[in-house]
Length: 243
Length: 223
Image (cartoon, rainbow over all chains, first blue to last red):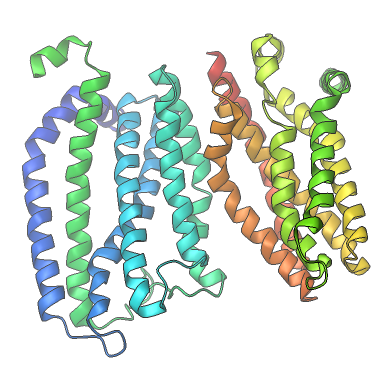
């Protein structure tokens, strides 16, 4: 059953058909959730006692920060699949995800900087969490650079997979940096083990925004991977039929 | 078992011979390190700032740069003259080859650099009681750096070592933070046993796992 699933998953042709089929639903769901989450969060959530209205940037900052790290874990999973079973599609997905991870990390850093000006009095601080997120940004950049610097795609796919797996040693450090070092950045307000430390009226739109970004990133992933597959498999006969 | 030991010893001997022939590859970085250490007090106002404190601030980055320069293109020549390919055919994997390179690097580059660092620490009047801690920290730090830089060199073997450095630098940063914290604790005279244990653990894991990953990466380039 696993073999059948992997064989089905491994086919770029089948994957492209599924992308085309599901893209519009995923993208629409993302837009709807984002509209609901942001309208609720920006216009109907109460104002924070300490920070005033500026806290509302969490509806951008928190989802992008969560996905910046989550995307790397997903890439590590695909890297394992690519190295163990030599599934070509997994390599395409890693590369597509690297671009989305780069964008998400940039948005997290950018929105954090904007949030930092009124709350911390500075847009940048060499704080453990901010610096480790910058490191994550550089890691994504490095992966893309590595892949683009080789002409032999099979080799660059496998090198990228190895680098992704080695790079995962940084993820626990990024995640735990706010707990291990005394930093300016606050500890996580939402964890899997404890109840959220923010009010429920702010928490619900935040969760909706997180789901919205998930859908939007998946739809972006569909598009990116489609571009990569069409470029890489352009000499295959099935591409002519598909196009 | 005995055959493996003989093979490893022969490999180490070969590597040592190669390094002895290329004196500039290990002496150059040591001289560069010494020059930076001699030059940096000249760039500051000696009357106001304690050199012992500045030494602890500057040492990590200087060691990192020196390590990078000392193992710049470490596999490059072997890759192009077929030595790596030969090792692969002979041993069916490159683990022993990379491990031998690492052992020679530790003996001929890391240990001399650590000794010179300690000499400079004494010269800059760093508290003598810190020296054993500093020695252990420098060795662990360099083993981690060198392992990562080996991996970086392996991954970008035919693209120049700068690409490798760019790729592994983000992964090295947490180690830089850890050692920076250790030196701060040392300056504040806080015991750093736990950091020693952690750093030693990381360097042992790095020696085992990264040697393996580097060997796989080199093998991949030959396929």
